[in-house]
Amino acid sequence: MSKARDNILARLRARNAEKPPVDLDRGFNSPDWNRQQRIELFCKAMRSVRTEVHRVTAADWPEQLAKLVKEKQLKNLLYAPAGPLAEKIESAWRAGEELPELVTREVDVDGWKEELFFDIDAAITSTRSAIAEVGAMILWPTPEEPRTFSLVPTVHIAVVEADKLHNTFADAIANENWQDGMPTNALLISGPSKSADIEQTLAYGVHGPVELIVLLIE
Image 1 (tube, rainbow, N blue to C red):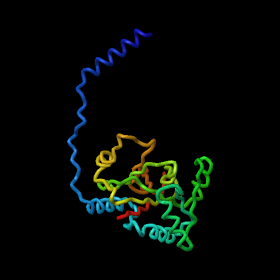
Image 2 (image 1 turned 135 degrees about the vertical axis):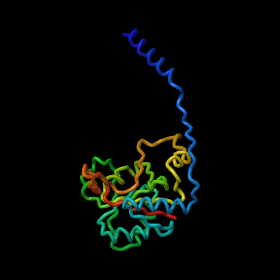
Image 3 (image 1 turned 90 degrees about the vertical axis):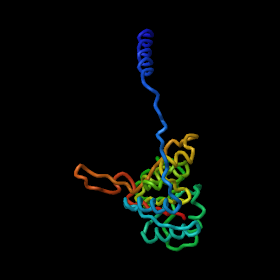
Image 4 (image 1 turned 180 degrees about the horizontal axis):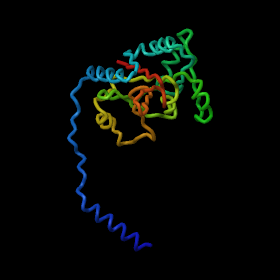
């Protein structure tokens, strides 16, 4: 058995030795876009796939959030009380009236799966950054904001900082030094969930949120 294994390995090594090394330098040059151009491109791309984008400020986004969920008549909003958005969300809810219930569950999803899938109207998450070229958000889920927040509820609300907009996906990887440590799961989200059958009939919400709302902080 050992001799057979050695023969197989020898043939594989010989075959690999015949192949030239792979050249990973593809000479990629990032577009020369400024901040305002990135914002405009990101908004245009997101809206083209039926994403609702609201351009807000760092000061007023919680109030805009409260106004939106009230207008949409949501009955509740799932959020992370230990997440980066919690303090401002809670403050806005204390100041507001007739707002949806804020919901959180600091237990494993198996402990409240039925409620999550059938009783939660919307969830809000932060984002790591975003990509202007294709109109996509980058999410690195954490124990505080697990991926179920953005994948399960009917409405997903995401907060994006304009200062964290990259020109391209390659720029995001390079600028954020992804090689130094990746999460167990990373998400790129460019619009609400959609799927098409063999007749190309497009349906939304088949595998995730029906609505995607982006609060872009400028």
